[in-house]
Length: 143
Length: 433
Image (tube, rainbow over all chains, first blue to last red; front, side, top):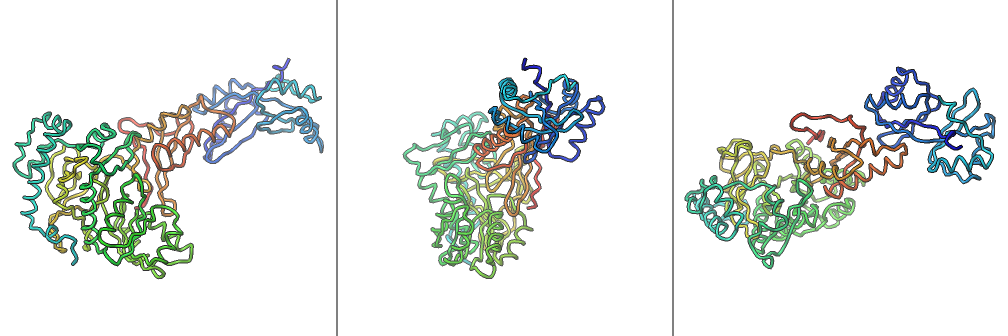
């Protein structure tokens, strides 16, 4: 059952202009949406805001209504030990499992540290991570 | 006062007009008899060559516009067989389709003669060493000035555009006294020289520059002249006329348009009605002797006026004032004509972006910089930065390919750029020229 571990990230296009992040955050606040994890990737002139939220559908709808360019992206969340060396262990495991990471970001919450990773073949990655002893977080934790 | 061809250049105005009339009359007869395009055009407005019985009757003839040349791509308007064409030049068109101009040997000779008179009138001749720093190739600037400068006996250094440090070295080593280029390129040369520790004013023999192919102002002329201690001369022409053909004389107050080569009019850009001398309007050219690609009442899109007072230099040929603007939205970026419609056409061929765009033009240092901001199509949005950069690069390459000039590209979110009701104002020009 790989689908349990597929998490829907929302990705939002943003021009490099002051106040863009604030307007995204305001929209999510107004909808009462909780943000679990979040990152901004930037290039010359624009950026992409990536976030794991509860009620991703509602977030997508609201932001689209406001004129933002939004898409869903399937990512996976790997549990890490929240101690020195925790990321190392996880990274070695991902390497052994042959996972090619497009991008990743992390957060450390009540239930420990989590590495969000974006890969090309999500289901294959989920299987490989499990086979190599990795622990994945189910998507029902992000609702 | 030096003249290249004093008999023609000082010809009494009445004699000049008689000569123009004769040339016009035979031109119209020739075209009516040998060109189906011109015959149809004249028939359509009910004009027969016999109706041309004074010089002023030129106004009865139909206008030609750039689209006529574009629509007749490549050579449908040529009135000589291909084996009489000795050269082609090509310029970009308004929708990405280029326009081709062709020359017989007589056409090239007349173009060169026009420039020989012009260069002599502004004081360039034997003994001068001139760098021709216009682009050589399909653009008319480089080769045009090249032959004109050789004709007057100057020593030509065919530098073309680019490799600026080398141009400055050659300027010093060969004792260059004159240069022909765009005004912004000359400013770039000056800036580059400074970085090399060279002062154009003190460390070179440069004394005169022939500048054109893009708009520039009196203010810029003052800056250039003061900073480099040279005389800056304005030059005018377009590929449809042949190329750069006319310059200011040593008075530097208007450009003589040789009456035996061209008949000029100023018309109201909206109604097409002829306007009297001294009144601002659109400059219209009839080339009286062109063979391969005749040009009758060609609307240049340039706004200027015909100056009435006799020129103190003694030349009797009419003068036009410095250009005052454009009728259309044509931009000139680093010497290359760019129409917003071309940009639109190029963008519409890229599925990842929409047709909503803005063009922002500025000067980066001395050089024109064009930024095209275009909205992305939501379907093309990806969470991967690489994909977005690839779209940006695709737009960049497509624009470069169709405009012949590089543009910076900004990807904008859908709906974020201005929408227009009626005529779109997609250009923001921040150049201080």
